[in-house]
Length: 631
Image (tube, rainbow, N blue to C red; front, side, top):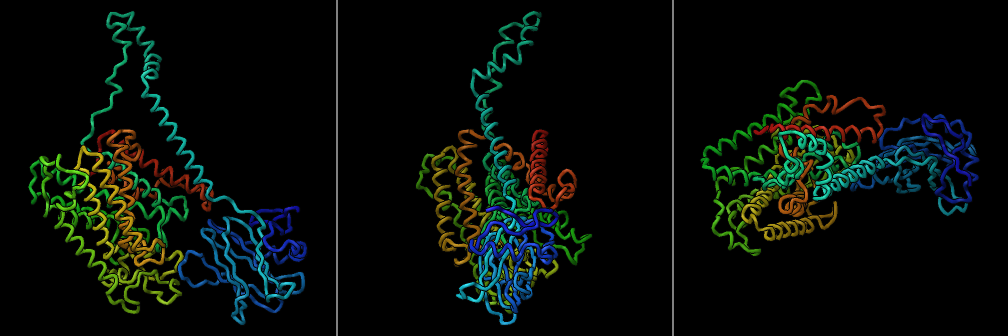
């Protein structure tokens, strides 16, 4: 059967409107006869499509019945369907009324068609539309009269593959990794090294032979010292590599991530790529706190002096977060009436202060003499921290008590939902439950984040801050789990098996806790994984991932030296500079430029990848110049 297509806006094609038929094949001819050549179709077809949208034409062939089309994504949990478009009653036979509308393509869509007058459901369907695709929904009486109306979906013009740029970018990156790895392998072969050395130094060798300043043996012999691996560094490269990985992904998603939904924060429950990086950064900060504190105190620094350094660094993080990278600058000059008080650096500052002071108060030197007594069954790294564990458990008890028992006006006690149209629209102003209420009560609506990710799917109207006060408690828990990773690395140094066993045990334990809290589901658990709330299940899940990543990185990077951590090691060594720099210079060239097509995933992806690569390059140059910004 010949395939003819409906033209999309801005394109001139065959005026017929049949395409890939999804309904009954025997009715296709009648459909073509009815819809083709209708001037109404052309008039209503011109809908300007944006990124992640498709064109949907509603053909109402029901005489005397006005239609109301409701729509939403299926991932919007317990959401009220929203009015998408209304289609007037059908006209004469063969001339249906047509309504054109743009529909979202990021997730599977739910469409429900109701009789506008009687508010009775006529049909319902679920379908995953493709970006810039062209579709027709035919609503008509069934010939056999089995039901009042039947809905058939037709693909007029195939959508584009919006994920193709990501696939290409991934394959190019993978090819580069393979190429570099292969070259490094060749470089490690002695015969290849000798051949390269002779090829490069042949002319120089001849010159030295014919001169009075050298000898063939001195010029021609390879120098093993040039190829010998350097001595083991004092720092653990796996931690800097992990920090750099998290920071690089953070820069990429903050710059837009190609405008793909999976590179943006989850609207409420669940995880996307963007939800992974901040907790990992907090985790590595916790590991660094213990390692750095131990080294500083061993050098003879007093606890009182170190406390002053901790307080000063925390104060600087708070100030930089509020004054330098405050997102409310996009509203104009910063004023106290609209300054956002919580934020990423502010949370890092508070978390760092609490965890560092806690470790300083109960600090115990690492006993060097009993290294041989530590076995795989030793719990010295945990038992030695029992006072800190008591404090952490008390803090977690406070989070649970406030979250589930604090009365919130107009909201059910213990509410963890997004508000808005979620939960069938029963609690539109209850976004975040106790967490949102505490922030609005103590900080005020104008001092917290005004554009939460919940507004995307759940259409919330109230302000909500994902870096709010209550969530900071679980950020402290996350950092303390990072401290435990640091203690494992230091208490059992040079005992790779013991370290890997403990990383595995923590990974499994935290993973099981997450499964129990969430019932292995996105929305049905006791405490769902939620980045906006920084729920305890979110902390245990991301901590399990963090221990697993260290389980891989530590032997690969630090033990066997199979990978140096390049290129992530370099931004990991200059994390504060890269984070602040990428926020301050976000809208400056060459990190951003005017795009030829602002509705193209490909162009946004290229821009964001270039900007991220530039910050990695800057970090590399600064590392080579030995320039590090520390606070």
